[in-house]
Image (cartoon, rainbow, N blue to C red):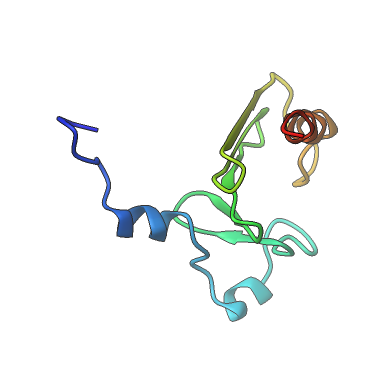
Length: 102
């Protein structure tokens, strides 16, 4: 915020955190089979069916923002992803963050 005013408008944030692909675009594929199952793309980030959004960097980083649970999970490693799937360590850290909410 600059002087109490938001940097981005609510419409911009909504556009950045909602699915921007059509079903036809998703049908053309992604980074592997079933890549778009439960997720899609927005502007420079993934958006998930449950309302979360973030990015899996491929070179060892991932971040996830979940407004529904008021949670942010950032994982930074120095190990490149071996596939387009989120590595086990990242999945386990995210799971641990959600488990800590209970």
